[in-house]
Amino acid sequence: MQAMNISTANTHPTTRRPARAISIALWVLQVLLAAAFLAHGWLMVAPPADMVAMINAQLGEGLRIFIGVAELLAVAGLILPGVTRILPSLTALAAAAGSWVRLR
Image (cartoon, rainbow, N blue to C red; front, side, top):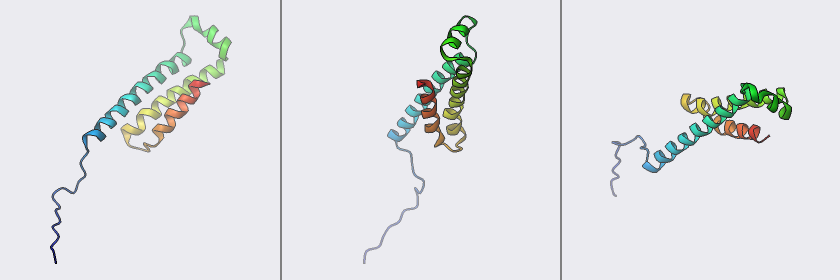
């Protein structure tokens, strides 16, 4: 009968380089998408004075405010779950919801 050699020296899984590179790339994309949502959301919530009448004529004031607030909430949904590690699965939902609002 052969003896089995069980090594317990390395019981913690190590992160491989490709997985780490993908993680970094995803964080960069999340931050870029959050920056785009932040810029557009802020433009909808607090537009420059000369653009208010034009935007309100096309969208209406209520829809403009709704889109702006939804995009600002999408920024929080993109960044906070990953940073706090509380419900990180919500990140994909926030990205989808923010993109859906933006397409309207």
